[in-house]
Length: 149
Ligand code: FES
Image (cartoon, rainbow, N blue to C red; front, side, top):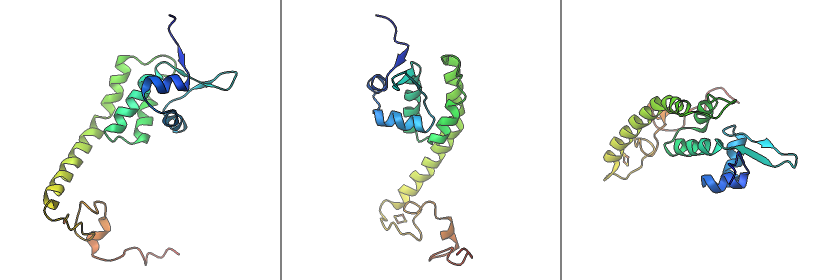
């Protein structure tokens, strides 16, 4: 059987286990690319399978799509990426993963404090309202008087 050099979107979906709609989404976000046939059908290079696998793994560990796109953009366009290309790409995410692991460690500490409390107070619970930097300035609404109309 001849080696398939390009895949249709259906073949890519079947072989990657990713829905066609998700593949279209990845393409609109610039994570994968296709060429169009004379009949206006998408065709993907074989290495798109690995790109999709990398995207799924990266998403699973919480790497933002924009970061994934930046990393994938470093892969060569003119040839199939080699093992060295892929390992260079994953090395870029090490710092990001280390930061996430530290963040999760802090979250675990907060969770330990909150288990048994359960108040989920918007004023004082870091678990219920983790990004409320303005909350440090006191209770109540902020930014009502910031001069913006
Ligand atoms: S649940 Fe009470 S402080 Fe988080």
